[in-house]
Amino acid sequence: DIVMTQSPDSLAVSLGERATVNCKSSQSVLYSSNNKNYLAWYQQKPGQPPKLLIYWASTRASGVPDRFSGSGSGTDFTLTISSLQAEDVAVYYCQQYYSTDDPTFGQGTKLEIK
Amino acid sequence: QVQLQESGPGLVKTSQTLSLTCTVSGGSISSGNYYWSWIRQPPGKGLEWIGYIDYSESSYYNPSLKSRVTISIDTSKNQFFLRLSSVTAADTAVYYCARSPWELAYFDNWGHGTLVTVSS
Image (tube, rainbow over all chains, first blue to last red; front, side, top):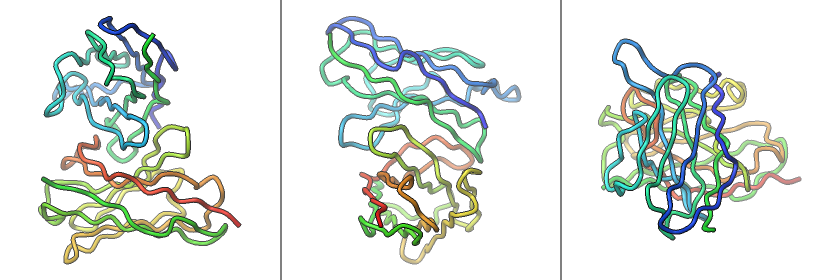
């Protein structure tokens, strides 16, 4: 299976500042035939299910604010929140779907306000 | 707007079978455009995909759980189901049902989740 490793495990960022979460896959999730990275990002607030933020590594899901952006290719990916808002406090997960019959998640990154 | 809702017992005895139902509303489960998944999250821990099924009843399971998992679907009731056998305390988790676009395995719509505790 493809192992997803996120860093850091937790971080604290001041309101209005940039927050960056990293995700590394144990093998490439870039599908050469369509040049797409099979990588998604989710946000999970306490007591709630995860919410899809980003798919194809950089495509925002419907209704997701544009302060959220995804980047990267191959095995290294980044989720960036350009200007942290109080409502962005959550745990963030990356997930590969390159292996359609064995999708796997990172361990999560807890984002707090400094 | 499609909504998913999990239901089932909140407490299951060790070694027995966990059974959950996901009811889909606001859209047809047999539309053929989606995969229907189960995902779980032990308390305070991360997410683990259990498996998914499509409208034709083709199913795929997490290799680590495959020997104990069965996912089925009833298109007439707009429901799909999870059965996990021989449960232990390690199976205690919030169980989510979720939807994926066809032939992709990211999850664009989730139920609220249901906590299942395994205890003797």
